[in-house]
Amino acid sequence: MKAAVVTQNGVEIRDVPAPEPQASQVLVRVRACGLNRADLAVAAGHAHGAVGGAGTIVGMEFAGEVAEVGAHVTHVKPGDRVMASGAAAYAEYAVADRGRVHLLPTDRMGFEEAATLPIALQTMHNALVTVGGLAKGESVLIQGASSGVGIMGMQIARHMGAGYVIGSSTHTARRARLTDWGADMTVDTLDPAWPDQVVAATEGKGVHLIIDQVSASVANGNLKAARVLGRIVNVGRLGGAKGEFDYDLHAMKRIAYTGVTFRTRSVDEVREINRLMRDDLWEAIAAGKLKLPLDSTFALDDVAAALAYMKANNHFGKVVLKV
Image (tube, rainbow, N blue to C red; front, side, top):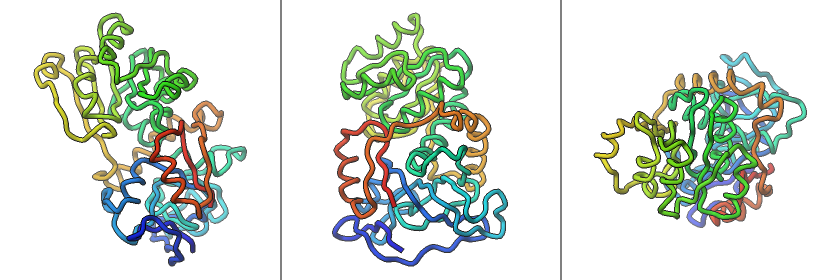
């Protein structure tokens, strides 16, 4: 099969053996796969969790038809149209654990649209609802809201009953589009006054919950923008993995600060994360209430150009490879 493989010369299309599903896995004939920020690190030869290095097939999410199922898989069968999260997605065939594989919620959903969803859905439902404990009527700030995951986060927050949703982006044009995707208000975190703007918009109290995909560059701003007994869930580190942190302000506000990653979660934990997500969101997805803007589509053979386009950071929403 054809696959996008990390080599000494960058990511190249190579012919490699197709994977074989284990007992609890599903083999999918991939028709489309979504690009994610972590793919850039893997494409550059770095490790991301258990994957990385020369010979690695890039990619984390995909959609297509079930080709084969393992002996312990009962909820899908060959020929079913599915979406999934799993390693080695940029290929003609990919495998995923049964708990990460979802039947497409409607016959109207195409593979390119489906390929944009798995990572964003499982990441943001877990961050907002399971870890973040979002309650109806609470205020939410999504840092890095113009990314695909961020755009989905604003929509999930709204769907789950958030009272006020704020999205951040340092890009003027992308920030202007956030109100079309669930934001009541937007902030530019390059403006030093952004925490004051958030506090003012929340009746002088600050937000209940911050989902942070940026980290270091906004860490102390988050502490200022959060209310007493607020919660911060650290999802990503686009603004740096290390930086200043005002421990006294953190203590004064008694803020609950939690870091999350799928890299250290067990198979059972990830299955439960996806089950809870489906329970809360699948009807809304089927109804078209939760979706992501598709910025650009590239052919698998043009994977290098697709990765370069994403790295340039001029897109809004998702970039997809068509296989």
